[in-house]
Length: 204
Image (cartoon, rainbow, N blue to C red):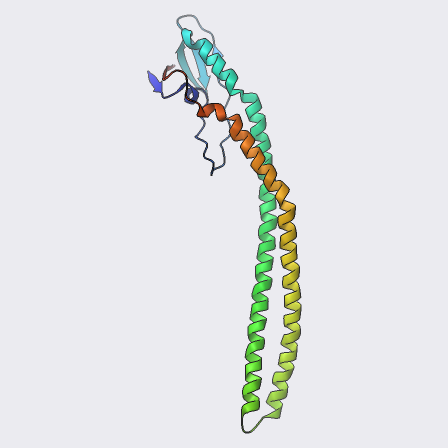
Protein backbone atom coordinates (compact mmCIF):
# COMPACT_ATOMS: atom_id res chain seq x y z
CA UNK A 1 0.00 0.00 0.00
CA UNK A 2 1.32 3.37 -0.89
CA UNK A 3 0.01 6.36 1.08
CA UNK A 4 0.15 9.73 -0.63
CA UNK A 5 -0.25 12.83 1.52
CA UNK A 6 -3.01 14.20 -0.68
CA UNK A 7 -5.15 13.25 -3.64
CA UNK A 8 -3.79 16.20 -5.56
CA UNK A 9 -0.23 14.94 -5.34
CA UNK A 10 -1.38 11.50 -6.43
CA UNK A 11 -3.10 12.71 -9.60
CA UNK A 12 -0.53 15.14 -10.92
CA UNK A 13 2.97 14.76 -9.53
CA UNK A 14 3.99 18.32 -10.15
CA UNK A 15 6.75 19.93 -8.12
CA UNK A 16 5.63 22.73 -5.74
CA UNK A 17 5.41 26.08 -7.42
CA UNK A 18 7.59 28.76 -5.82
CA UNK A 19 7.06 32.37 -6.77
CA UNK A 20 10.77 32.94 -7.28
CA UNK A 21 11.21 29.88 -9.52
CA UNK A 22 9.78 29.09 -12.92
CA UNK A 23 6.84 26.66 -12.69
CA UNK A 24 7.25 23.14 -14.02
CA UNK A 25 5.03 21.90 -16.84
CA UNK A 26 1.97 19.82 -16.01
CA UNK A 27 2.65 16.12 -16.22
CA UNK A 28 0.87 13.60 -18.43
CA UNK A 29 -2.89 13.41 -18.12
CA UNK A 30 -4.04 10.80 -15.57
CA UNK A 31 -6.23 8.05 -17.05
CA UNK A 32 -8.88 5.85 -15.44
CA UNK A 33 -9.41 2.25 -16.58
CA UNK A 34 -12.37 0.10 -15.61
CA UNK A 35 -11.72 -3.47 -14.54
CA UNK A 36 -13.67 -6.27 -12.82
CA UNK A 37 -13.48 -6.32 -9.04
CA UNK A 38 -13.49 -3.77 -6.22
CA UNK A 39 -10.79 -1.52 -7.72
CA UNK A 40 -10.26 0.54 -10.85
CA UNK A 41 -6.89 1.40 -12.41
CA UNK A 42 -5.51 4.93 -12.20
CA UNK A 43 -2.55 5.58 -14.49
CA UNK A 44 -0.24 8.48 -13.64
CA UNK A 45 3.03 9.12 -15.49
CA UNK A 46 3.25 5.56 -16.81
CA UNK A 47 2.57 4.04 -13.38
CA UNK A 48 -0.60 2.12 -12.64
CA UNK A 49 -2.40 2.17 -9.29
CA UNK A 50 -5.27 0.08 -7.92
CA UNK A 51 -7.83 2.48 -6.43
CA UNK A 52 -11.04 1.45 -4.60
CA UNK A 53 -14.15 1.93 -6.73
CA UNK A 54 -15.82 4.09 -4.07
CA UNK A 55 -13.18 6.77 -4.79
CA UNK A 56 -13.85 6.81 -8.54
CA UNK A 57 -16.27 9.74 -8.41
CA UNK A 58 -13.94 11.81 -6.24
CA UNK A 59 -11.01 11.06 -8.54
CA UNK A 60 -13.04 11.98 -11.62
CA UNK A 61 -14.14 15.28 -10.06
CA UNK A 62 -10.58 16.12 -9.12
CA UNK A 63 -9.32 15.31 -12.60
CA UNK A 64 -11.99 17.60 -14.04
CA UNK A 65 -11.07 20.41 -11.65
CA UNK A 66 -7.41 20.02 -12.64
CA UNK A 67 -8.46 20.88 -16.23
CA UNK A 68 -5.26 19.48 -17.71
CA UNK A 69 -5.86 20.50 -21.38
CA UNK A 70 -6.42 24.16 -20.49
CA UNK A 71 -3.50 24.13 -18.07
CA UNK A 72 -1.27 22.67 -20.77
CA UNK A 73 -2.30 25.42 -23.21
CA UNK A 74 -1.55 28.07 -20.60
CA UNK A 75 1.83 26.45 -19.93
CA UNK A 76 2.64 26.44 -23.65
CA UNK A 77 1.86 30.16 -23.77
CA UNK A 78 4.11 30.69 -20.74
CA UNK A 79 6.84 28.68 -22.45
CA UNK A 80 6.59 30.86 -25.57
CA UNK A 81 6.76 33.97 -23.41
CA UNK A 82 9.90 32.64 -21.75
CA UNK A 83 11.47 32.17 -25.18
CA UNK A 84 10.68 35.77 -26.10
CA UNK A 85 12.07 36.93 -22.76
CA UNK A 86 15.31 35.02 -23.37
CA UNK A 87 15.78 36.83 -26.68
CA UNK A 88 14.96 40.16 -25.06
CA UNK A 89 17.41 39.48 -22.24
CA UNK A 90 20.14 38.63 -24.78
CA UNK A 91 19.54 41.92 -26.61
CA UNK A 92 19.58 43.83 -23.34
CA UNK A 93 22.76 42.12 -22.14
CA UNK A 94 24.49 42.93 -25.42
CA UNK A 95 23.51 46.59 -25.13
CA UNK A 96 24.77 46.69 -21.53
CA UNK A 97 28.10 45.14 -22.55
CA UNK A 98 28.53 47.63 -25.38
CA UNK A 99 27.88 50.51 -23.01
CA UNK A 100 30.34 49.07 -20.51
CA UNK A 101 33.04 48.80 -23.18
CA UNK A 102 32.36 52.35 -24.37
CA UNK A 103 32.50 53.66 -20.79
CA UNK A 104 35.78 51.84 -20.11
CA UNK A 105 37.32 53.30 -23.29
CA UNK A 106 36.21 56.81 -22.33
CA UNK A 107 37.69 56.45 -18.85
CA UNK A 108 40.95 55.10 -20.25
CA UNK A 109 41.32 57.98 -22.73
CA UNK A 110 40.39 60.51 -20.05
CA UNK A 111 43.09 59.10 -17.75
CA UNK A 112 45.68 59.21 -20.57
CA UNK A 113 44.75 62.80 -21.34
CA UNK A 114 45.12 63.81 -17.68
CA UNK A 115 48.54 62.14 -17.55
CA UNK A 116 49.69 63.96 -20.71
CA UNK A 117 48.58 67.31 -19.32
CA UNK A 118 50.48 66.66 -16.11
CA UNK A 119 53.57 65.82 -18.16
CA UNK A 120 53.18 69.05 -20.12
CA UNK A 121 52.93 71.08 -16.90
CA UNK A 122 56.05 69.37 -15.61
CA UNK A 123 57.93 69.93 -18.88
CA UNK A 124 57.10 73.64 -18.83
CA UNK A 125 58.07 74.04 -15.17
CA UNK A 126 61.68 72.92 -15.62
CA UNK A 127 64.46 75.47 -15.75
CA UNK A 128 65.50 74.28 -19.19
CA UNK A 129 62.41 73.76 -21.30
CA UNK A 130 62.79 71.21 -24.07
CA UNK A 131 60.73 72.71 -26.86
CA UNK A 132 60.70 69.49 -28.79
CA UNK A 133 59.21 67.56 -25.86
CA UNK A 134 56.63 70.29 -25.22
CA UNK A 135 55.50 70.25 -28.85
CA UNK A 136 55.25 66.46 -28.82
CA UNK A 137 53.13 66.51 -25.66
CA UNK A 138 50.87 69.21 -27.09
CA UNK A 139 50.36 67.14 -30.22
CA UNK A 140 49.53 64.07 -28.15
CA UNK A 141 47.10 66.10 -26.04
CA UNK A 142 45.30 67.34 -29.15
CA UNK A 143 45.07 63.78 -30.45
CA UNK A 144 43.73 62.40 -27.15
CA UNK A 145 41.29 65.30 -26.83
CA UNK A 146 39.85 64.34 -30.21
CA UNK A 147 39.74 60.69 -29.16
CA UNK A 148 37.97 61.62 -25.92
CA UNK A 149 35.28 63.59 -27.74
CA UNK A 150 34.65 60.65 -30.08
CA UNK A 151 34.61 58.18 -27.16
CA UNK A 152 32.15 60.31 -25.18
CA UNK A 153 29.88 60.59 -28.22
CA UNK A 154 30.00 56.81 -28.67
CA UNK A 155 29.26 56.30 -24.98
CA UNK A 156 26.22 58.57 -25.27
CA UNK A 157 24.98 56.61 -28.29
CA UNK A 158 25.39 53.30 -26.45
CA UNK A 159 23.56 54.68 -23.42
CA UNK A 160 20.66 55.81 -25.62
CA UNK A 161 20.66 52.41 -27.33
CA UNK A 162 20.47 50.67 -23.95
CA UNK A 163 17.54 52.83 -22.83
CA UNK A 164 15.74 52.12 -26.10
CA UNK A 165 16.34 48.38 -25.65
CA UNK A 166 14.97 48.51 -22.11
CA UNK A 167 11.90 50.42 -23.25
CA UNK A 168 11.33 48.03 -26.17
CA UNK A 169 11.67 45.00 -23.88
CA UNK A 170 9.13 46.19 -21.30
CA UNK A 171 6.10 44.69 -23.13
CA UNK A 172 7.92 41.36 -23.42
CA UNK A 173 8.70 41.35 -19.70
CA UNK A 174 5.10 42.22 -18.88
CA UNK A 175 3.77 39.44 -21.14
CA UNK A 176 6.10 36.96 -19.48
CA UNK A 177 4.99 37.96 -15.99
CA UNK A 178 1.34 37.77 -17.01
CA UNK A 179 1.84 34.34 -18.61
CA UNK A 180 3.59 33.14 -15.44
CA UNK A 181 0.80 34.51 -13.22
CA UNK A 182 -1.83 32.89 -15.45
CA UNK A 183 -0.09 29.54 -15.23
CA UNK A 184 0.35 29.72 -11.47
CA UNK A 185 -3.32 30.68 -11.17
CA UNK A 186 -4.28 27.73 -13.40
CA UNK A 187 -2.45 25.50 -10.95
CA UNK A 188 -4.11 27.18 -7.98
CA UNK A 189 -6.24 24.11 -7.35
CA UNK A 190 -3.04 22.39 -6.20
CA UNK A 191 -2.67 24.81 -3.33
CA UNK A 192 -6.02 23.92 -1.74
CA UNK A 193 -6.06 21.11 0.81
CA UNK A 194 -7.53 17.87 -0.44
CA UNK A 195 -10.92 16.99 0.99
CA UNK A 196 -9.65 13.55 1.85
CA UNK A 197 -6.69 13.52 4.16
CA UNK A 198 -5.16 10.48 2.44
CA UNK A 199 -5.62 8.28 -0.57
CA UNK A 200 -4.18 4.78 -0.47
CA UNK A 201 -2.96 3.65 -3.87
CA UNK A 202 -1.68 0.19 -4.57
CA UNK A 203 0.78 0.01 -7.51
CA UNK A 204 0.02 -2.80 -9.95
